[in-house]
Length: 114
Image 1: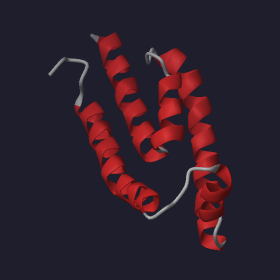
Image 2 (image 1 turned 135 degrees about the vertical axis):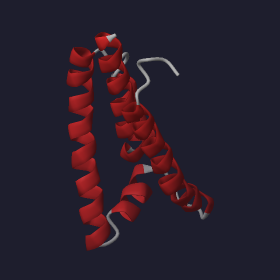
Image 3 (image 1 turned 180 degrees about the vertical axis):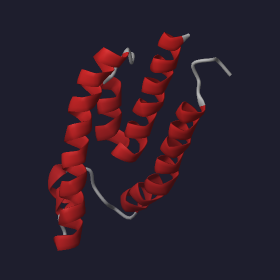
């Protein structure tokens, strides 16, 4: 294991894997049951009731904050191509993109120390 690959980076990578395994079975089930990614159908399902509306809005605001943070912080912290994590967030989910970004940020920090 490279010196820049710390336990903290490994923990974040494990959380990204957990994010993938915890969320994508539901995403696939939605699609396999005829769910659509067309905006009207997708957001109709995401805002189907008050509870899903609260979760959806919470996630959207958190994803926007992450997008700004990743681009600005990534440049400062030396994370390569931070915009990729923004794309990953909007395509696969914040539960995957955020811990992956944090793992790469930790690696960049550790590499600067060595």
